Length: 326
Image (cartoon, one colour):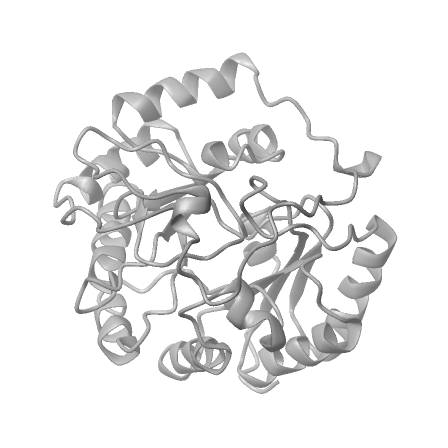
C-alpha cells in the first residue's frame, strides 16, 4: 500500500520529498508526534539471498525498479522466489502529495516509449509467472496513464503469453472514461485500485483523491469487464475506527470488489503521518473472516500484507466463475 521513492533514472526530474513535498497539503502533519514502538510481529525478514541479488542486478541493467525493492518490502524474497514482482511504471515523480507515501512530488518526465519493451524483456529474463504493474499518479496525462498501462500489458503478453498481469492503478481523477477505454485495449487479468483508508480520513491521507470516485472506478471497470476480478486494499493504523472499516468493506462489496488486502500502515519518515496504532495479527485475522462473510472471494490480511502480497495465489484461487452481484 504505502511505498517509498523509486530510485530515479538518469532522465527523471528531481521531485520534492518529505516536509517540502507536504507543505501545501490541507491537513498539517504533526512531525513532532512519535509513532508507538513497533511490536515484535513487525520484524522484517532479510531478503538478501544470492538469487534475489541476481534479479536486482538484472533490474538495474534494464533501468527498471520494483515497488518490492523501493518499499523495502519484507516479503520481497518470498515473492521473487514465487516468480512474482511488482513494477512501478511511468517514472518516479508523482503529481500528488499524499502524506502516507514517500514517492517524490513534482512535474513528471514525458512517458518513456521504450519502457513497455524493456519491461517485457525483464519479465521474460526474470522468468516471472505473475506480474503486478503500478504507477505514480499522472494527472498531467490526458488518459491518466491508462494507455501506457495497456501498452505495458500488451508488450508482456506478446513476449510471454503465459504470464498473468495485474494492474494496480491510480484513480484517474477526472479521466476515468478515457483511462478505462485505453486500458481495455489490453485488459489485465486482475484490476486493482486501492481505496487506502476510510472516507473520514481522505482529506488528511489522500488529498486530491475522492472516496466515492475510487469506488466508482472499481464498479465502472467491473461493468465493462464482468469476468475480470477486481481488487482493492486498505491500510490500518491511521486513526480509523472499526465501524468505519466495516462500512468501507461493505462499500467495496457494493461496488463489485472481489479481492481484498488489509495491511498495517508504516510511517516512511517523521515528515509523514504518524502511526496511530499497530493492529495485532489476531485482529487482522478477525478482519479477514469478517470480510469473507461479506462475500469477498479472497482476502489477505496481516501486519506485513501489501497490495500485491501473494497476488498470484489470491487471483489463482478464483477458479469458479465470478458472481457480479455483491
